[in-house]
Length: 360
Image (cartoon, rainbow, N blue to C red; front, top):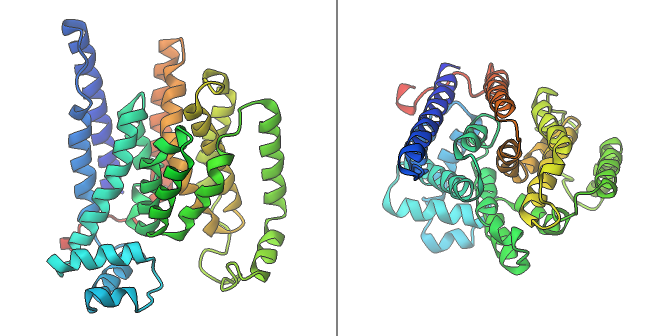
């Protein structure tokens, strides 16, 4: 766990240093320090840690084997072989294979795309970039991408294309979803959520979402059984991987963030701002999908499409607090909880201990 604690501390140090320099430069020169002062070093740190991680996760080995398998075929043959994985991911592997047979470059490219997707959107929309990045690392999708890379790659593509979701440009957003689905089919869930995430924040809709979620949670096993009768997930049995319930610890923080957002929903300009409304609704569904995962763990994977918006919503709510001392207390408390939560989730998991690939 030492590496994960060190990463959190380094990011916190970079963020506080940026805030200190920014406040000083603003006072002296009336000009803010560029956000790149934090973005560049933190990006390099996270890129290095992810690219050169060891093979301590199951999917690392699988991705290495698949990389070598794809590159045993001629380029045009990959379109006719019929691999189980989505064609976008297969094609990405094969393009990289033109230049190298070293799978490290695969992890370098996928890491860069994932980080670029999250950093690009955070730097454009977050009111507190360094806090959003710390959330991304501790409770977001960063460490998860070490294992289920294809899905987080799809989530990063959706996130970077969320501009079209905010601006209500359906067909442009549809193309983004289709592109993401070429790396993981679950991205297609964001097509109906283009409409669902635009619900108005009011008591009636909050009640409907809460009631509907409660019904789904209660009858979820029956709903899954009906879906399997139509051939959806019919290859999954109760003994299959991910079909048992997830640990309650995984759902604690998403639920806490949703409750915090509900209590502070009045701070959002939800009537005139699609962006705030979508962030809020996505954070609620982040909690709902994690709650559903308590029955079937695989459902947690859908939450990765909603989780990124919480990285933007929580810092924005903090920024709207009038009492600056209370705001500081909230930020300190959140960071402490994030680091502690990160420690609890990763301890004694496949991620612990962390080691670099050359240390094996």
